[in-house]
Amino acid sequence: MARCSYKMPEDFLLKISKLGNKTDEIIPRVLDAGGEVMLRRIKSNLTAAIGSGTKKPSRSTGELADALGVSPTLIDKKGDYNIKVGFSEPRKDGDSNAKIANILEYGKSGQPPKPFLKPARSSGRKPCIEAMKAKLDEELKGI
Image (tube, rainbow, N blue to C red; front, side, top):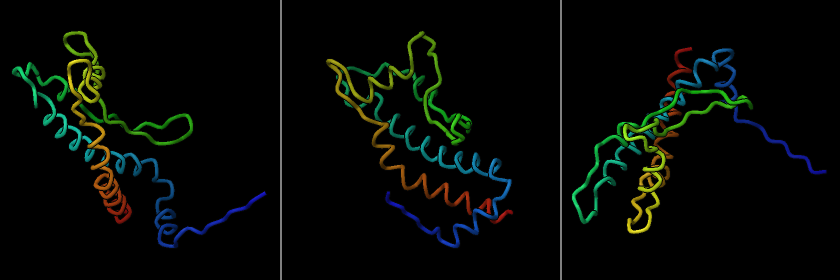
């Protein structure tokens, strides 16, 4: 049987030891900082995609962009912290915001795709991680 071991960097271990019993307070704030970065990125891509490149004038009501938001930080049954950026439901007309976003992202027959989620995810990854790192350092300085 193969065995693997690795050593964590000393500065990382010192930061973790400082957290102590405050992890339940700090982790949600760090994840919220990253969620806000992704929310801004997705919202800007969404507003740019809605109504662009259409043959007829846009019938957008702005309801899809208004429904975009960040969930509170939750702990799943494995003990992992999760935060989600997504759409609140339902719409005023009874349709699903997720369905409308999916059609916009991937297109449908007679409607070309206008991706806004995938580009936001790929371009927002590094800024999101940097924002979370900065927030974690700020929280650690406060201890």
